[in-house]
Length: 315
Image (cartoon, rainbow, N blue to C red):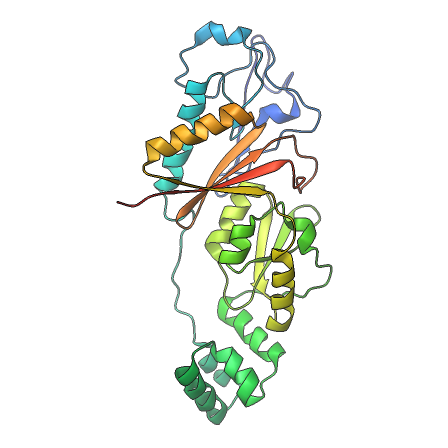
């Protein structure tokens, strides 16, 4: 059930006198929060610090700063910024890659196609032998050596992963670069296809899905993510072209320990003063996104955000 919380000013009834960006929505599944609305204001007199252990007391009432904001909560001081970041990092580091990775048994692609009657035993044996000899994916050898259509292989992959086969109609990858860091597009073989009704991001993969990345994206960008298989002949050229597009500025940060990473990030936030900052774990790294200006619409401007991909060096 969604939880609704807000920063209440003295002598106000719940729900009164609130600007759009002061309302913070938290969902247990996705921690989805509203973004600061363009033209909104923060840091008004009597703004409450988001750090529950804040000790600056009434002194912060005279501070004119309106940022940084960490996961919807305003920070009144550098000390409170570090505390909010420490809490966010510990939450993510204590999880299991940001999602529950359920390793379900999947029917091997060749056996699935054989059961469906889409290939025969001779075709399967020939493709398996070629795969053992030269490597690669079984679907590749079924198409190249056994004359199995690409559409049929993609359909089988969709059955294997219980997901749809996504087409490239209305493809707008270059317009979606603010949603996914280039590093993730490259490393995890993801292809953002389009946003539907400002609510759903369709994310394509060539051979297998990455549910961890999909859930992390949902938590970070506030859109529902629908993953699916894209045919190889359509995926590869689009993916290569997308890697040459303009993405938000991204910085890689490797830290010797969690406290040092918190200190590094806190200094960055105090210098940049983002209107919003979120922290999400993606596999073994932490994705920290800074919104430099309020967001207007489902997709931020590419120059209005900054991504930090962080890791803690293992001893």
